[in-house]
Image (cartoon, rainbow, N blue to C red):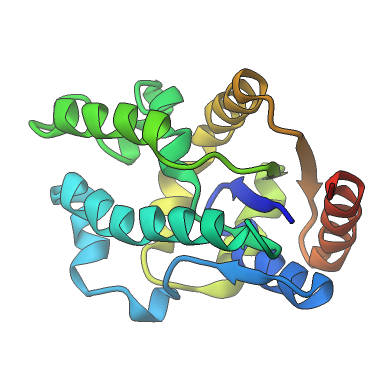
Length: 204
C-alpha cells in the first residue's frame, strides 16, 4: 500500500481531500493540526519571526511524513504535510519572500535544514498536487475565514507555480508517480474522485 503526499497552496482543500480519501479507500490521513489548534504567535510570527513559525510547523510535518511512511508499509497513508521534501526547490524564489525573506538572519539555517530534509526524510510513493486559479483560490480561502488568511490572500498565490515546479522536479528525480489536479471552488468531491482513481491505478 502506498504513502500518498498531497501538496498545494494553503486553502486548496488538501486536508479535506486527504481525510475523504482515507475514509473512501480505507486508509489513514496524516495531517497538520487544525488552525484552531495553532498557538496565537503564529499569525504575527509570519511577519516578525518567520523561522520560529516554520520550525513549529516542521515538528508536525516531519512527524507526519515519518508516520505516513511507516504506516504505508502495510496500509494506505495520505499526508498533507510534505513540504519539507520540496521546499528547498522554491524557498529561494522571490515569491517565497512572504514565507521567509532571504534577509532573515535564520535563512541560511533554514536552507541547511531543508536540504537535509529533502535528502533524509522518507519519499512518498505517490504525489498529488492540487492547484487552482486565482479567483477560485480566493473564494476557497475566504469561505473558511481562518487565522492568518489575510496574509495568505495578500502574498501566497505567487508561490503556486514555483511550488508546482519544485514538486514536479522532486517527483521526476525520485521516480514518483504524480498527478496534477486543477481545483474548482465547491467541487472537492470531483478532486477526491480523480485522486481516488489515481491511487487505485498505482497501487501495486
